Amino acid sequence: MKFLISMHINPAVLDALTDEEKAAIGAGHGRFIAELKESGELITTQALVDPSQAAVVTVRNGQPVVTDGPFLESKEFLGGFYLVDCENKERAVELAARIPDCAIEGLGVEVRQVMFSDGHLEA
Image 1 (cartoon, rainbow, N blue to C red):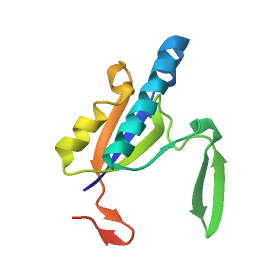
Image 2 (cartoon, helix red, strand yellow):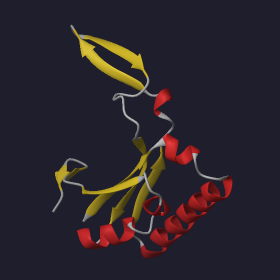
Image 3 (cartoon, rainbow, N blue to C red):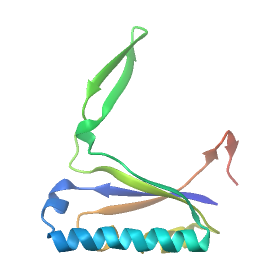
């Protein structure tokens, strides 16, 4: 079963962390990635740039309209994700709980099963 483990970032929370705390988060992600590779459960992981660098695309009257910045006005944004393939939701939650962000008040990690992938419904 495939699961998307998404990390939601609150810039105010990150800005309040010390350099050492930020470094520990980065090192924790490095260890987590290595463990997922070792177990064979990692499909991919990606980190995303700040939403201020995003482009929002809509189509109005048949023409694309592009605006800068985040789609939603929110204090939190999607910062990155892990796509994993594991036996069940309980295992995906177990993996998500090992992400360093989970231990920081104000940051969130969400686990959602993939229902459609590569043109096929997932089992």
